[in-house]
Image 1: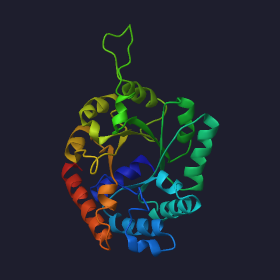
Image 2 (image 1 turned 30 degrees about the vertical axis):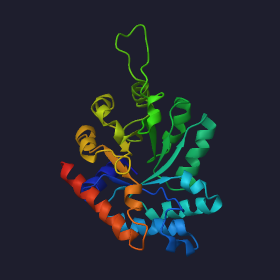
Image 3 (image 1 turned 45 degrees about the vertical axis):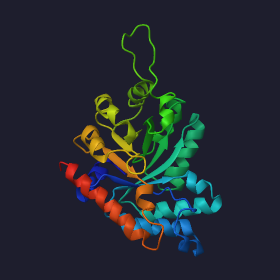
Length: 274
C-alpha cells in the first residue's frame, strides 16, 4: 500500500484507527471454540464489525505462532480476508542479519500479503534494508516503546565528551534509521504512554508515520497523542487491541467491539483537519 492510498483512506473514513487482532484463543467467546477454526472465525467477525471504522489491522504473530500450524493457517486466512483497502501490519518484530531478514521479508510480503512488518533496529542497517526493498511495503521500526523496559535502554542518555547536551538512545535510533528509507516506506513505533516525548519526536522525524500502541488498555490518551503527534497528513496510526476485540466475551462481542471502535473513530474525526 502506498502512502498516498493510506492517507486517502484516512480522509475517507475520517479515522486513523488500527484494530489489533492479538487474538488469544483462551479469551475469545466460548461458543466459538466449537468452530473448525475458532481464531479465524473470531477475526472474521471482528473485521466485518469494524472495517468501515478503521484504516488498518495489526496481527500480532506471537498469538498465532503459539498455536503451531493451525495458528499460521488462521493468520494467513485472516490477512487474506482483510483485503487491499486496509493497511495490514504483521507485528512480528523481526530483524536479523541481512540474508535472514531477506527471508523474513519474503515470508510476510510475498508468501503472505502483509503491507508492513514491525522490526527491531538494534542489529543495524543491514538487518532493516531487506524490508525496504519491496515496492509498496513498509518497515515499521521500534522507536520508543510503551513498556516499562523502555527505561533500560531506549530512554538512557548517550554520554559523549564532545557534546554538552547528550541525546537519548531512542533519539539516535530515530535519526539514524530515518536515513535508511523514506516516509514512503518507513514508519516508527512510538508508544502512547510516552506522550511527553511526542513533540520532540515530531521535530526529529517530521514527515514519517507513527504506529502508536498503548491507547486503551494501557492507558494512553488519544487526545494528547493526536495533539502532539499529528502532521499535515495525519501521520499516525493509533492501535487499539484488547479494548476493542475483548469489549465483550459473550455472543454480543461483535456489536460491543463495533461500539468501542465507533467511539474511537468519532473522537478521531474531531481531531482531523481534512
